[in-house]
Amino acid sequence: MTTEEKITQSETRIFKAVFPSTTNHYDTLFGGTAMQLMDEAAFITATRFSRQRMVTVSSDRIDFKKPIPAGTIIELIGRVTYLGNTSLKVRVDIFIEQMYTEHREKAVSGDFTFVAIDEDKNPVKILK
Image (cartoon, rainbow, N blue to C red; front, side):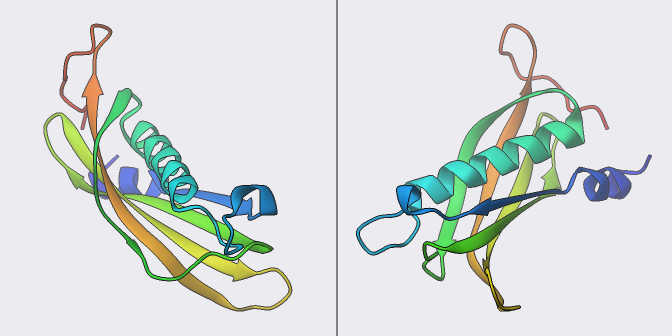
């Protein structure tokens, strides 16, 4: 399988409903909750791509472009964007979907870097 095929096959999509229990006093999703969901989607993407133990080593610029209101559906999409020897990067975008209309827009984007590790938590090559 080619690297591009593996990237396509490992793309991860997660849907969540935004309930009041996950929102702040503005009735929008907590930024920290969005980041946690993004890291989870990125981890799943990295693991599906490599099929190895992966750990987050950094999150690069996370842009909050739109607030995510309670009562909406969000879709997180993770995709591998860079492949190194022991590390890879995953881009995660969050899209807001209104529950009862076709309206959809991008709300948040961010990049996460992962390293493949062995049982002793030492970096190892990502199998290509």
